[in-house]
Image 1 (tube, rainbow, N blue to C red):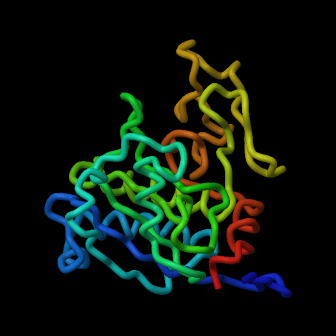
Image 2: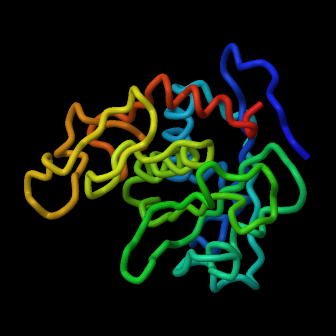
Length: 234
């Protein structure tokens, strides 16, 4: 099965989302729409995506069965048998123009905590594979929900085909011509990483910078071009 866009979008596109709630304390499908911090995160995500021409058409909420309690904290990512792969494979079956996001308590790979991870970049439109969706940590939900919303928008960007504008060591970048690059010479504190605060004017404020942006959360015209032409939005 293929989805072939024969005409480029002339305006905004829409995307449908399902949030799967995986044992997050105080957050379930019944109360998700009334959960203030979670809705703050959703609003931040929506503001970023809509600014790029990707509108949220529909949001559904589902509770994940208690039998997968071991997946509330994701600790492995490689292969379909990993915790990440097993979780994303629960996205359903067949082809559906809907993006599945799994909210977990945390994502910790041997002491390296991350706030979100897309199954691949770009992600498949087919459900039920170990790459079919996004895992999002709720570690920032209580304190800084806007950061969780930013992280979710960042991972959706990956799923729709975007890469980091700059990788953490400043030694890698995406292929788009209009995204700024921040090289290792900007590592002012010599810790081996280029932080957003060290990359002002060099992409540190871009949604797809490798770490949370400093200041505004921008996307470039070419990034928007990639996102709206992905087969998942409609």
